[in-house]
Structures are given as C-alpha cells and as structure tokens.
Length: 334
Ligand code: NAP
Ligand code: GDD
Image: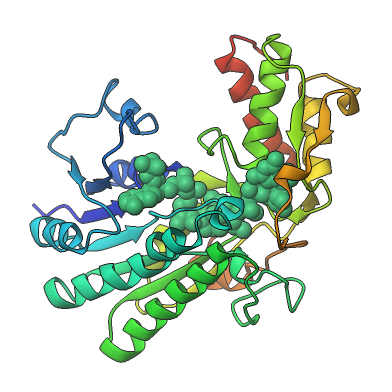
C-alpha cells in the first residue's frame, strides 16, 4: 500500500489553515499542524474534525510551536518529515500591522526564512507553499495585477510579505528547493476572522437582526477588493505543489467591488433595505496608508493549474450572511 503523503500546516487554527486541513484529510493526507500557545482555546476552526476540543487521531497531529521560535520549527519538521509544508501562519491583519510593525515583520516575514532554512537543513526535498498576498501590490502599478506586476506595499504587513515572497524565490533559485508563492487576493468565508471587513459586516448584520447590536462602525467604504471564497483558494494552493516545477501564481476572481457594495449586498441578502441607518463611519478604522483598488488576473492559474473560481461576489455575501444569521438562530429564506 502506498504511504500516505504528509503535510505540515502552519496557521492551522486560522481560516485558511483550517480549510486546508479539511481539504488534505479528505485527500488522504496525514496532516500535522503547528499550534501556538494561547490563554484561551484557539482551535475553534478545527474542533469539528473531532467534534470537540482537538485531539489527535491516526491522521491528524497537533504540535505546539511558534513562528518566532526557530527551535520549535526545526523540531517539528524533524519529527514529522513532511512531503509538503503550507505556510499560512502570520499576523495577517493589515491595520493592526501599523500598531505592531516589528512583531509583524518577524511573524509574517522572517518566519518564512526560518522555515525554509530549517527545511534546507533537515528536509530539503519538502515542497513549500508561501502564503503571499495581493497586499504586496499595494499602490497598484497596473490593473489588473498579475504575476509580473511590480510590488508597492503600503503597510508593515505588505512589506513583510514582500520579504517572504523573495525569500521563497531565492531558496528556489539558490538551493533548487520546491518553493511556490500563491499570491492570493482577499478570500473570505464563514470562518473569516471577525475583524476583517466582510465578516465584521456579516456578523454585525446577524447581531442586528437578533437585536444584540444597533450599528456597525466601519472605516473606508470606498476601498475596492477582489473577494473570493476561501475553500476554493485552498484547492489552488494544493495544485501549485502538485506541478512538475515550482512557480508563483496569482489567485483571484477578476472582479472588484467597494466595501460599500459589500455592505449593500449583505444587507439585501438579510432583507434590510435601509442599510444607511445601521452603518456609521468611524475614522479609527482608517489606515495610515490605504490600498485603494485590488483586482487580480488569474489567467496563469487557469492555464497551468486548471483552476478557476466558482463563487463570486454575490454568492459569497449570501454564504456569509446566512452562516452568521444561522449562528444567531435566524434562518434566512433564499
Ligand atoms: P488568519 O485567519 O489570521 O490565521 C493566521 C494563523 O496564523 C492563525 O492560525 C494564527 O494562530 C497563526 N499565527 C499567528 N501568529 C503566530 C505565531 N507567532 N506562531 C504560530 N502561529 C501563528 O489568516 P488567514 O486569513 O487564514 O490567512 C492565511 C495566510 O494567508 C496568512 O499568512 C495571510 O497573511 C495570508 N493571506 C490571506 C489572505 C486572505 O484574504 N485571507 C490573502 C492573501 C494572503 P492563532 O489562531 O493562535 O491566532
Ligand atoms: N478590517 C476592516 N475593518 N477593514 C475595513 C473597515 C473595518 O471596519 N472599514 C473599511 N475597511 C476597509 C479597509 O480599509 C480595507 O481597504 C478593506 O476594507 C479590506 O480590509 P480587510 O478586510 O481588513 O482586509 P485587507 O484587504 O486589508 O487584508 C486582507 O486581505 C489581504 C489580501 O489582499 C487580509 O486577509 C490580509 O492578510 C491579506 O493579505
């Protein structure tokens, strides 16, 4: 019988890592996850794999570690000897990266170097996925953005991701390692962190309907993003590591919408016409430097990976609003 493939996922307790765990377990992988110590449970997104606080099974293993702790990374890689590493762990909030730029640089940027260096020493044949970001395009030099578009990051987060991107390219070119950058545009889901704008809006609407919240306070309503559906983007990330050669790919829907349009669509799904009564603009949520417009061109991914997004803007808003309403005990009709 063929040996199961082994994957190590950093950021397994986050949105993407948890969907990737679902995806790989369904494909028959043995999945290892790096979990950092937290004073309260941080495993809510993977608890469903067991129906409770996570315990290991024969295919699923959790390891305490931290992206700032190089020794923990070396020990975990040595212990599980993965065929593939999916590096999703990061301080991933752009606004907050202005408050904690130094730790963001370490966790989001330098961790890629630590992992690749650990792999180079311990397990150089392991394939490596770097969670790169459309935030690297920042003040975009070209519309739409593709693999060859120059970077112009606008936040400590974006700068850290540019460092990580080039580190992955460098380890590929210098040491022949199989390292890929997935340059993913915004992708959302019911598992999205509640302080990212789409989820803040959909949880807010559900709580308004449940009578638990009166208003949603937002920042820049004019920013435009290319929003896709997170589980589909994990399929794209996996496909990158199944190619004969490592490469970098943009993953996006090719549509862009303002935050205001997301608000309108989400309130429409919830059956509330007068959304302006529930939204207040609070300058606290503005960013010192904003990324105004992002829109991706995923032609290369379509041609080389056979990947295309199915869920687009309206369906995404509907999935998220319905899921958050359901959590509040409210069933919305289609
Ligand atoms: P997320 O939900 O914020 O998850 C981040 C993960 O990183 C969590 O599991 C978190 O652990 C973990 N983490 C943070 N600091 C850590 C540390 N010091 N040591 C170990 N683990 C640590 O992010 P996401 O939306 O799933 O995104 C996944 C990756 O893709 C990130 O690298 C993000 O920057 C990148 N990305 C995301 C998007 C997007 O639209 N979602 C687009 C492009 C790129 P806790 O659960 O304990 O906090
Ligand atoms: N978070 C947040 N909260 N954003 C707001 C708010 C608010 O109250 N009001 C308006 N916005 C605007 C932000 O200014 C930004 O222009 C846009 O909504 C999207 O913000 P986020 O949802 O926080 O996402 P992001 O685009 O900054 O970053 C996400 O996508 C990147 C890929 O482009 C994160 O997931 C990053 O980790 C990821 O790399």
